Amino acid sequence: MNIFNTFLSKCNQTDNYTRFYHTKEYLRFKGRETLINKAKLTELGQTLGYNTDSSSFLAKIHKRIHGFESCTGRIPFKYLEAIDVKLEELKLCQELDFELFEIEKSEPRFPKKGFHRLAPAIFRMSEFQENTSEEDAIQYMIQGDLWMLYASITYPELLIIILSSGKKEPSYHWLTPEFTVAKQWLDFGTLGYANGITRIG
View 1: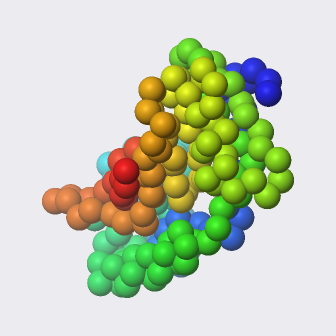
View 2 (view 1 turned 30 degrees about the vertical axis):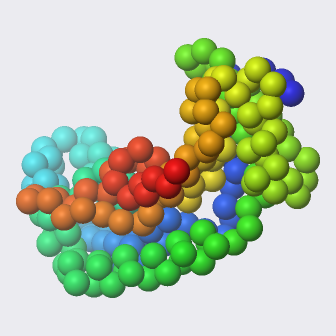
């Protein structure tokens, strides 16, 4: 084991799974025509309150659209209406995303690494041997004195397993592909700690 700082990856990649896959594809498809049409981009920028005469307008609006298409945070209905997104179609995409989620959730997982937090922004990485089961990885993480610290095994966009201080029973935080409908926007939360988390344990 080595000491790593917070900037190194502490995640176990889930190569065959993307959270909100169908929703992201749908938003990209609906927004494609707007992205390549300067007049439509300008109109969209005005709708969203941008200064369209600014030299940085195009860079800013492209960055904002990319954020929307990533399905994190809040997507205003003004934007969805401007690119002709239908809520019924989005909900169908969500159903399809849940089907993918349930398939991925049922697959066996073999994490490559986990970490203990030693202090703010300082982590101790644990690397597991190839084909180590999730159950064995959890048992490894709680052995010795380190289990008294906060520990975690993370699969991006799918699951965060948390081993809380002094507790040997893990809690599973599933990152379900769901959004909530608010008055002026759809809220996708922030990945990992907001909407779409189902806690078990």
